[in-house]
Length: 366
Image (cartoon, rainbow, N blue to C red; front, side):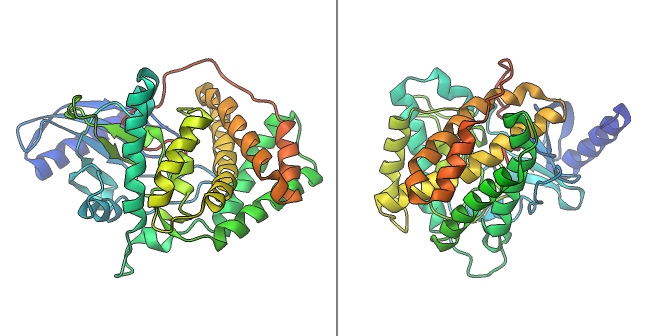
């Protein structure tokens, strides 16, 4: 927990940093709404210098229990920028202090605006987002220096997701501790997911490619369609080509109907470097949905246990994604069918409505 003295020290640190890096004076410091990670973000209003505003990203401290650590923002951000991906510019910072000063592209995310748009406008924004994925997946690192290409959605990561689901989701959903048999059902299902994941092509993935991490530029022309910008980049890793699409089209913050999500997926599928067949794509998509949404389901309950129950409003949609995906893959393997049966027994605990994730929050569902 931060104290008033801690905040004063941080404000002084940021004041000195923007003076040194940007030749500006700090006029105002606005905390952005906290997310589910340990990072903090502030919108800075400046006087003089190179810009009138920026976002300070503070990456200090350890992640929450059960959450694997991630690399720093650089050099992944710079690598994506150099290859034409729309990311915020880095204006300065102090890497040793865990501070990055980033371009302030805007306050609103896709999560904020999607519910306000008609179907045509919403589809246009989602198609724009999906169109980046073939370019992202074609990137390679011949130097071998980028952390993102040394990280992978591997068996260890998948096991960590299963452990969180067992520890945080099942006791709440069942209303009691899971039995040894129920724990075995979860482990067996994740073993199937791991087998398919390890056998799949490995492509660069943003890793948290969801609506809260896609910002709309304030200066985008409404006539030409708003331009989205990627944030929360540090966790990029190698994963099957469907992973980022699962994050976007099975997003707990903006729920698209199945027909709309399927149409978006099918539009981009043939453009992916590996061009998976429709059958391969659909099966891996559902298996990765089970892994991703099981972790999200656990995460929302973990945050509620830490005192913020507002995130529980996303639990019903998350559980619905899990159940539908499990139903579709149940014929593939009896281990998945048993997992689907277990999911059907869980209750969907929810909380009263609350504001959506802040557009400046770059640390939503991990």
